Figure 1 (cartoon, helix red, strand yellow):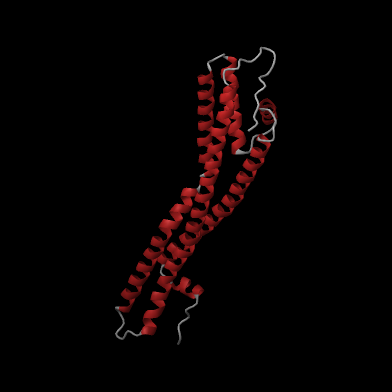
Figure 2 (cartoon, rainbow, N blue to C red; figure 1 turned 90 degrees about the horizontal axis):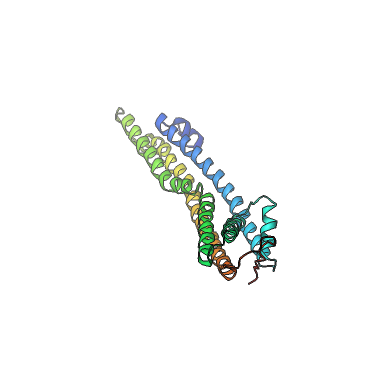
Length: 236
């Protein structure tokens, strides 16, 4: 009889260890695809939100108006939160009538701290994709080696060994490597894509911090009136 070499049959006929390896790789693959789709949506939302806020920032409104508008709504965009943290620290130091250098340095430190927090959020679960891409092929290879070893142990009890008797055992073992590659390849591609997108987001935020710092530097040292909010301008 010709042995059934369909994928389903090979998986069902595999040894318990190989089946566990296959099941684990399938679970990891599903988890990685969940992370991939979540990252695609999340990074697209971050890029779009940053671009919208940056356009509003350079629209000619004063920073006082921008700060009032940001304070009255939920801050959902990284660039918006960086702006809010820098502006809050800058105004706090102005009220204490510190010198211009202290005002600018405090605002810059606040923005850098906020930048690091935002990048931690943006980069979350990226290491999971890297781990899947690097480890899955080896896990699949382990399943293949174990399956081939198990097949040859079984053949040692046979008096006559033919290709037909060897093929099913080797084929079912190789399925583990195939599943490992199926889990690893999308994870590696997605990791490289997301790493490039995150680098662009980081450059965009760092550029905004530098430009915003230049604006604050021009306004540093201007002591606010006790009753009038500081009219800080944000035009290029």
